[in-house]
Image (tube, rainbow, N blue to C red; front, top):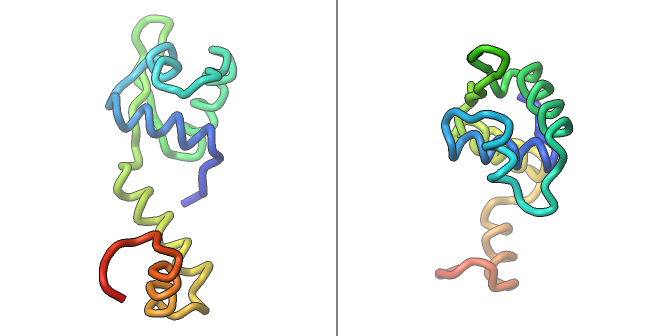
Length: 107
C-alpha cells in the first residue's frame, strides 16, 4: 500500500469521517487554507487510481467513498514505521520515549 501525501491523507480523513461524500462536503472538512474545488477533485481522482477511494455516479456528480478502511491504513503506516526503525529495540524505544516524557507510565 502506498503512503499518502499530507493533503491526500487529509482528504482520506474527511472521507473516513463522512463515509460517503461529494467534493464540496470533503472540502468543508479540510483544514484552512482550503484548497480549490478543482485541486481536491484532482486529488480525489488520484486517490481513486491508488485504490483508496471509489465513487457512485448521481447524474453528473460523483459521490466518493473509502475502499481502504482507516484501520487498515493506520496498521500499514505503523508497520512501515516499525520496519523503518527496526534496528532500534522496542524496549529501547520505550525507554527513550520515557526519558523524553512523551508517554506516561512505567519504564
